[in-house]
Every structure is written in C-alpha cells, then in structure tokens.
Image (tube, rainbow over all chains, first blue to last red; front, side):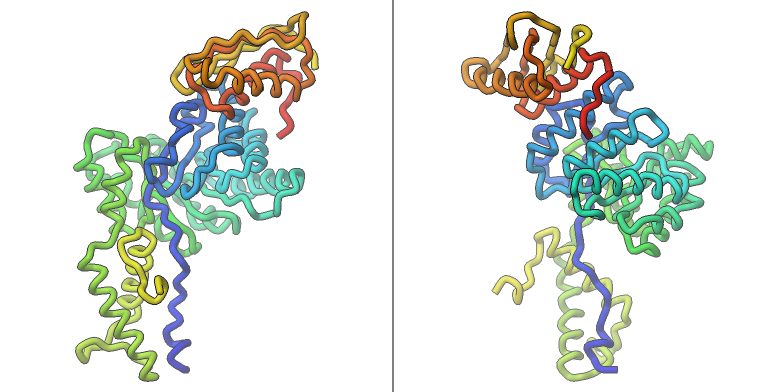
Length: 310
Length: 94
C-alpha cells in the first residue's frame, strides 16, 4: 500500500449547518430580512406556525419570496405540512417549483413517509422541468417510533441531507418531562447522531426556546456538540452568535490540528506509512479529527489554508 | 376567471399588505393606501395590476392597505385574495 492510499481519509468538504433559523411562513416582515443575521440555514415554516385558515396564503408568500429574494449564502429549507393533510401535496409542489433547496418533513415516523414525499417531489420536478434530484430532503424525528426507526429513515432517500430532533413532541410522546439537563433526550439525541453518521448525513438538534437565557443555550449547544451534532435549530437571531462560537474551533485547537497535519504531510513526503509526532505514532481517529477541525475552521472563516490562498 | 365574492388576504403588520378584492364594473380599479405611496405607489399599482391580469381579471376593485410590503409580498397577497374570491374553485398552478 502506498502512502497516498494509506492516508485516504474520506473527508468531504463541510457544509456548515451550525444554526437553522426558524421563520414563520406567514410573516413577510421576518421573511424579507431573515438572511441578514448570518445563520447557516433558514427554515421557512408552513406547518405549526401557520393557522389552518392561512395555509394557502403562507404557501403563496414563501413561494413568491423564494422566487424573488436571494437568500444566499443561507441554505433554504422549507417545512411543509404532512401529506395526510389537505395542504401537504400543494406545499411540496410549490416549494419544488420555486426552488427551495431542502424540503423538511415534519414528524417522521417511518421510512415509508420519506418515500411518499420523495415520490411527490420527483413528480413535481418532472412536471416543472427541474432536474430530478435537485430538491434535497430533511426529516424531523419527533416521536418514539421515529427514534426507533432513525437509521431506516436516515437511509430512506439519497435526497436526505440531515435528520433533526423535535424535542417537545418527542417528550410528550414518550411521557417524559423536559428538564434543563436533558436526560430525557439522551437516548433520542445519541440515536439520531449514530443513525445520521451511519447514513453519512448531518444531524441537527432541537430548539432551545428561552431566548433570554444565553447561558443555558451555550451549555446545551456545548453538550450537543460533544454528542456529535452538526448544529441546532433556533428561533431567534440572537441565538446565532453564541452557537457559532461553540461550534467554531479555538485558536489552540487549530494550532494543534495544524501540527498534526504537518506531521501527516511529512509522513507522506517520506513515504512512511505511519504518522508520528515527537516519536509517538498518531492514530487515525486523531488524524481524522484534526483534519475535520481544520475544515470546520476554514468553513467558519477563522483559518485560511495558505496553499489555497496563494 | 370568475370571482364569486370578496377575497381578503394579508395583515396590517409591518412589511405586509392587506388586500381586499371584489368583482367590479369599470376595469381594474386600485384604491391604494400606503406608507410609502409617494416613492413606490407606481410600482405597487403595477404589481397589483399585473397579478390581476395574470388571472385574466378585467373588472375588479382592489383595496390595498400597504405597510411597506416588498413586491413579492404584494404579489402573494393579491394572488391569495384572488383565489379566495374565486371561492376555492381555482387552484394555483403549482
């Protein structure tokens, strides 16, 4: 085995999903400037935040906004109504047509639900002359059955880019109490992370709804980052900065990762199959974490690769 | 397209517009009340007019109470009002 294959570490470029800002679908005031706060993604909501009598108006509002406003660099996600409501199919068709990047399913319990929505998406793409596969999907897991089926949900479609946890519904469903420590969510969170990683997609944690408690928000973000989550859903722009700070590598972490990367480059240059630092071998997981740390730092714009900026 | 009655859509919140649309007799008549009328009145009227024409509405009275809505919001609200005035018989082509 030569050194280049030895060090094929299978890292793909990182798409940041540290924060996904929730925007009610019938609120044009919030919709017009949702992208200026700097969240990585926006989630326009046609479901719970829209009253039944306003579903038609909200769909038209989001449809026209997405056709007109350039929300880049934010990733644009739209949460549609379930297909078993009178609004689901029309929501999916409208959002495919106006070019929403990601369609998010509410409360997903089985892989079959993903297949059903994918069927509608593909039909709409064909009807509107849009390349099949352009519209990505995200699923929210909000119940006991969804957690049990997490892996089959996460692998139900190639369109899936992430799965997310909806904690309030989940806790109501399992008859648990919401606590600050989040003990009641541990199994769901860990299951979702493992399922997402096994499927090779991202995982996004639930909202923290007390917008005045920044300390607890930071504690929660730190804890879910440690568990392996890529980011968190948020309900207020003021939650963006603290969460990004939690997810951004520190200068010390970057420096350490750079030392490991240098050792890796030296090993490749020397044709050595083993990376070592100060005479000690560097394990593959350590290498992987270091390279991922640098990718994250680059994506967060706190580190620039000299070779790339030349 | 035939309107069955009056269709109302939108709110009076900042950044939104409230549209009240009903069958008329003398072409497309727009009664505009806007916080930004002197600057954007012309454009708002054009969006309302264009949206009505897309649905082939020739005679319609439209009352617009604008609270600084973007063009895309006006278009969405007028479309919703038209579909509501048509009594849910017309589906938008999604």
